[in-house]
Image (cartoon, rainbow, N blue to C red):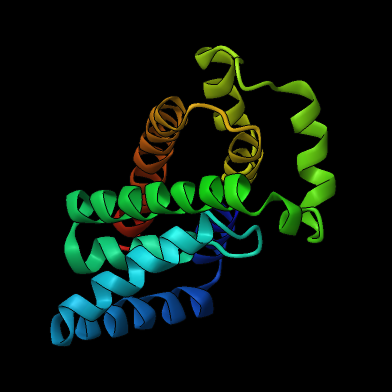
Amino acid sequence: GFLLILAAVLVWHSPRFEEVFLKAIQFFRENAVENPLAAIAFFTALSALSATFFLLSSAPLIPLAIAAWGSPLTFELLLLGWILGGMLTYGAGRAAYPLVKKLSLYERTTYYREKLTPRSQFWFVLLFRLAIPAEIPGYVLGSLRYSFGKYMLATFVSEFLLAILVVYASEALLLRNEI
């Protein structure tokens, strides 16, 4: 989200950045046409990884994807990637919490593990899922062995809402450039 806002500000206020942005769109469109399955797989995989690792973001590619495929397909692929990323973090939290303890995520997840329980109410978990960066709830709730079905429902609802917002904002960025 933050990267998308930063890109929008740069595009609106920097002719040089706008030129680079338009070239990136053209490059992505051409590659998406030449290798549609590879482009779809790349975008979906990057979306999944962005929901798994704090330092990755699929936000800069969203306007490019919209320009290549349109908003409906971009929305679906983004949502699919984020759901897959949520599944990965939940699985990692559930199966490999001892490994998570060795990673930098341990401090971040310990605080939330102390606030939640496997019996936390769904609405509380949904709010947690909406408020916290995407990767943390999966690791935390997986390690707590929170209900996978409830976790996936909360993940779907939160990612659905965020995907609508991000795709809408990306469309506004593209319309500003009349692409």
